[in-house]
Length: 168
Image (cartoon, rainbow, N blue to C red):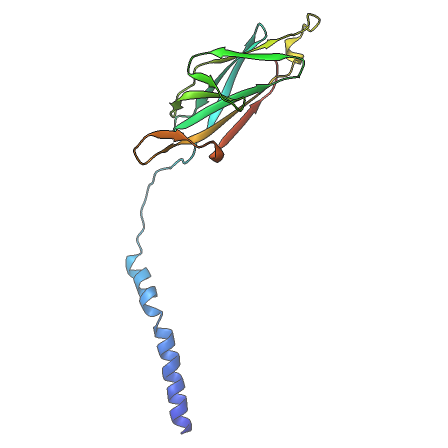
């Protein structure tokens, strides 16, 4: 009886160990090694370019060449004693939330049209424009598509937020 129990225990252990052999054998028979490869960039990278002259900031957003297509919006802030007046291309349109939205899709390697932000009500005693601080915030979101193929922007899924400060 004791010999029978030992034999059954050994059989149970060997069956348990052999159950995983198929998975291990599949790994060893499908393993392959390759050389070379390609770098894949996912997401987007954008930068803001600014020029300052005559109390006006000239803002343009550029997308890196390997970035995915995105929509862009921008907004500027300064002290409450001053007014900001936006102008420029008809592709920049104001939104109800204070942002200006670029109507075209910004593909990799492209730059938006210039958005001009003029600072008004600047006292004459302020002569150093570099000391005057204006913050420009821009955001991007990836282009999404409806079932019918129509592109749209989902601003709740904002990917990239950039901030640039300074008067000049």
